[in-house]
Length: 379
Image (cartoon, rainbow, N blue to C red):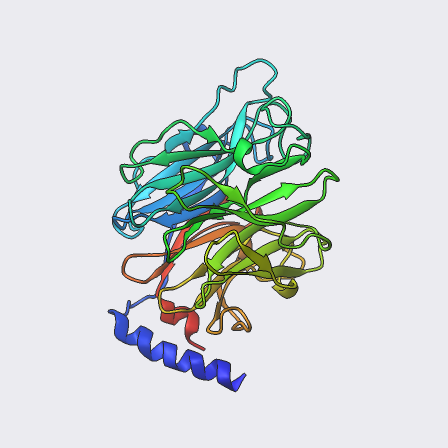
């Protein structure tokens, strides 16, 4: 514990020298709330910083209500060029025809966003459910009529316009699996330029497993990793970070409802897909919810989730100075009901977070908050 605190004392000094301190370190802004633009609900936040420094927020536009796929759901995006102070209008960037017969709304949702900082390209991945082909109802096979589709759209103009989504199911899914798609939130770019999205699949036995997909050719093609935990516990929504030694750390939603997060480490050398998973472990309270994991350029890992083992409440930010071996007690960002979250590092090294929260509903609104690294590290 003393070593951990010593690491953080050093990091505090570095952080305080890095930039101007804010009078109030916490900035907050409601980005979307139920009823905005006539939409019943907004959920599943993703957040990234573009190569130009633009903040890019993605989320589900749930037209008919707060329920998951299958439903009339599209993926929305909002942009900010001033570190989250103001935001442009909502764009709909992934949308399938809800009126197609038998499509059950033809929804697409659960987005994740990834930026290629070397080319400026931006990718958004999501699950397309044509008919009842979502978490429940998806089956073996490869076609949209058989199984949910892992789709990716791309922007080459800082998020202003987007390509039509393309399914990568032929590249990443075993035909026997019942479902394969991204983990919502964001993806990462490794130091060698490799693009990585956290992912998940439900095997032929319908048991879910967390994993990741990676591209070494700028997103032209993708390959999928083995399951992080091939046996128990079952895991699903995940987020991923590159560690100081180049290994990947996967933080996973634990579907055994054990009240703790599941973790595993992917060690590799040479080629990212030629590696192996460590033995998994459980750490940090988690109420079976999606969470966020990022690595700050100063080497600190940051983790956000509802900081309770049973209830979706109290959005909390924790830090690790030793690549996830130990974690701080955490800083309380929001005491209200809260659920999904996604963090990013801004161009000026501050941290932005997009998260679901509300007084009576953990997903009544999507709120943006911004804070300096030292706020997380201070006692």
